[in-house]
Amino acid sequence: MKVVIVFLLSFGMILPAIAQDNLLDKKLRFSSINQVGLLVGANKESALVQSINGIKKDQWFAGFGAGIDFYIERGVPLFIDIRRDLTIGKNALFLYADGGVYVPWLNFIQKERKLNSKVSPGAYYDAGIGWKLTGKNKRSFLLSAGYTLKQDKEEKMMQSWNPMFTGFESNTESYSYKYRRLVLKVGIQL
Image 1 (cartoon, rainbow, N blue to C red):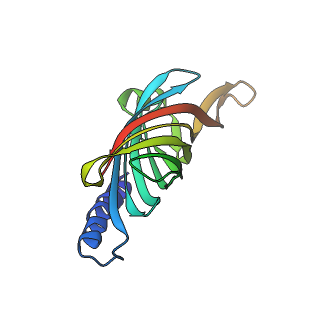
Image 2 (cartoon, rainbow, N blue to C red):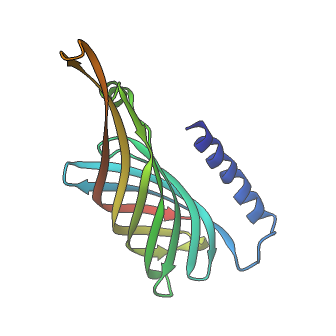
């Protein structure tokens, strides 16, 4: 988890510096998207917070994102985000697609429940359509809806009594979890 935090902090400091030093083409500009969301799945509803930083050119945006996903088990999605405006003007429809890895970040209660388990990262993706309302200084209000999936894996150590060998046997059970949800997000793009 420390490596992930160091990576995100480094990327967050380097990209704005490059953009401000005009090392990039004049038509390219740094852009940041910050959004909150509501996740609705088969089991319950929960929240999502994301920050995406990248480069915008004309109708395209590409960047790296991270967030906190509270659905069932807390975790950190790390992903690449690509967006394309479908229309030109202050009111624009856009498509987006995110793909990356979901890293579990269990809270204290979740860790206690999985005491004899090893939880490992899995795939993460999110895709949908949205509406962008651009105001002064090229700042935009974003509203989007989409479909998202996060996966993780668990290896659980089990011990059982075996009377034939007069002792305990250790077994490992593997589980793969897939959480499919609908997502509604509201945010700003700077």
